[in-house]
Length: 241
Image (cartoon, rainbow, N blue to C red):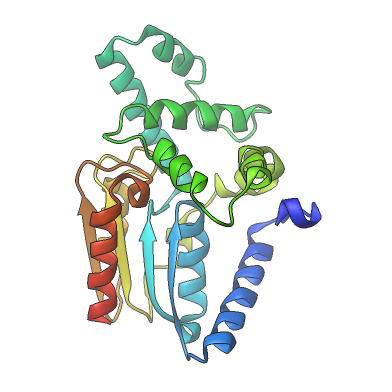
């Protein structure tokens, strides 16, 4: 979007409005009453809230790298990263993390750099390098070009207002009562959105149908890290629907 018109979404409500427009467009294009909505990471924030607010358009919601409470996510992820760096004897990473012991503090001017640093260290201790695999997939894409790569690398800066808003997000504030089936596909080693926090929320969820799948040996980017396993779980979900 940014490469096409240079406009920046200013808040989550605008992105939810954009999502609604896309959903309605898909329903009309494919002549269906409802669609299956899958959200990963930031997309899981939008997907969860949309499924709660607009079940009339959603056949089922699937969450991966599911965000529950960003403050708790980041604090637990930070603690995991620091513990992992200490166990590995990586003093450079340990020292970097100790410079931001109040993390995450959205009042910091350089909070975006802090988030990027913590997530990079987290990723280095998961079973698979999801980012590297994602880049390889993008290279083979018929529709993802150099300009898109440039835009992706600039995304945190471009979307600074959204990132700051996301850091205050708490899914509990939107409720746990879904009128549509809910499925989670999680990476066991995910430090960015820890499985323990997701499971705690999921236990409170009421829905016509719900199921939580954890894929071993995968981290936050589970769909890139364990492609075949992820595809198999998706097929199972579609078949149950």
